[in-house]
Length: 328
Image (cartoon, rainbow, N blue to C red):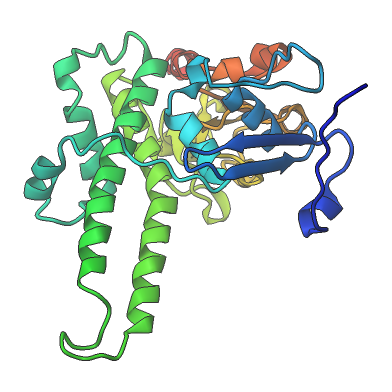
C-alpha cells in the first residue's frame, strides 16, 4: 500500500499560469495560516525564495521538507526583508531602540533622507566600525541600521496619525476619505523612494571617506542624471579628458527591469556600472546586462546568492572603489 498527498484547489489566475517546473513553496505561518508561493522557474524571484528558505541544495531533487529555518539567511536582514515584502510579508522592526531619541531629535517628524542616513551611521559609532577596512560590510550594516530605525519611527508616526482619525473637524462624523487616501499614498511613496536615496547617501559618505572624487546627480546628455560620475562632471564634459578614465555608477536598491534605464546615461562611458542590493538575480537577466556592457556591483555578502558563473562576473563594492581610485 502506498500513501500520497494530493492538493485540490479551485481554478485561479495563478493556477492557470503555473506550469510544470515552477517553484511551489508551502509554509505554515505562526498564526497557523498557510502561505503558498508559486514562482516561475529560474526567475529572479524563484531563485531569491530558494535562497531565503535554504532550498539551494536539496536533499531530494525536486522536493524538500524543512521543519524550521536553519541557515544564515533565515535571520531577517536587509536582503531577506526585501524578498519577504515582495511576496506580501511585512517584517516589523525588532525593537523600539532609539525611538525616544529620534522623536526628540527630529521633533516628531521625518527629517530629510540625508539627515536620517547621517543619524543612522552615528548610532553605530560606538561599534568602532573601520569604515574603509571592509566597505562591503559597512554599506550593508549602515543600510540595515537605517531600515530598522526608519521602520521603528514610521510605525510610531503612522499609529499616532491613525489614532487621531480622519474627519473634517474633531467633532464631525463625516470621514475625510481624501485625507486618508492622501496620507496612505504619502506613506507608500516615502517607502519607495527612501531606500534608494539612503543607499546613495551612504555610498556618497563612503566615497568621500575614501578620498574618491565624484559628482552625484549631475546632468549629462539629453538631461540624463547618472547617480554618480567619477572623477566628476567637469571632467566628463571636457572633450579632451580621456573617456577611459571616466566611470559612471547607477544605484538601485532593487533592479527588476529598471536596470535598462542606466544604459541611456553618460554616453561618453561605454561600460556602465550598476550597484544593487538585490539578491539572486536570474542568469538570464545578468547575461543580458553583460551583453549590453553593464557590470553589476553587489556587496560581497550577497554574492553567495548568485551562481559561481555569475560571481566570476560580479564586482563587489570594494573592487569598484579600487577601480575608480586607480582611474583617478
